[in-house]
Length: 345
Image (cartoon, rainbow, N blue to C red; front, side, top):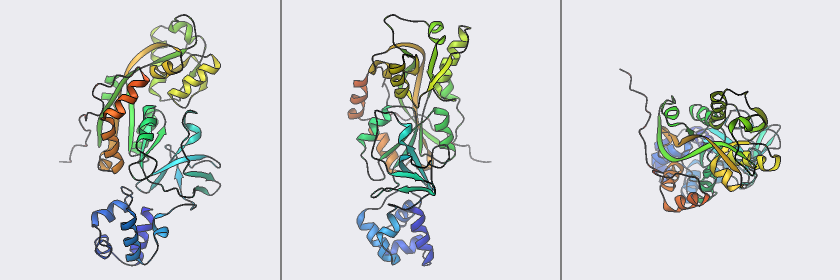
């Protein structure tokens, strides 16, 4: 969408300011639309299209159009894959539905094909793209609605993959978790940070009795991808008791997926405590983790960023997460110190 507007404006030889005057909108609005930070109202879209001598559909509708859509890892969407999609600047980023928990299956926006990807009828690549492995984002996604620039597009992935996406400009924000000292030393500049929660990671397992790490690690374990903070917690715990490394069983897409696979396979699963409780599994805690939301500073005023930060601090969100159990929500939504690059001297 932003690319089409920019191209149409340059084709007729107008600056952003000149287009704004012709359309009766602010230059800031034109800039925000072109940068992907804002989706115009119907009235503004009509005036902009008229000022450029074209149609709203040509400028702002991408339905059925092939577009370059990538995953959080920068790879193209595979043929046949369905996904939700949002635009980070000029990059359309998909959250493949196949990578999400089976408990969540939102309406898809895009389908991959041999030529790239096609947006489905009525879909627009807008919204606020957040990557990470905090399942509560699924609740936030539902509460913020399914259309418009304030909608949430959640890309489930490990903390490491989320941070890589944030640095590479493939998501607006990342949810990270880990031991407090580990999170404090992560090197990412130019982000603003909010506290989300605290919870414990460990092994969920089926048993009538409590089991120790030595016993659980001797079995194949439902694992997470390399770089996942919960997987590293298991590796540290196994090393601390000097037993052989746990054998990797199925690789889960996230905390909920790990617990679900553990229920059906009987294997211990690397996950977090709320998932173990919801699936009726025992839980062996390995570490307590802090969870933070990191938003790239350039996107701090994005409508989706504003809506998400407001939601985190709301009673409506807090009560829904408390109902899940095993969440410590003290300070949820409070802003932490920013990580800004020092000015050059």
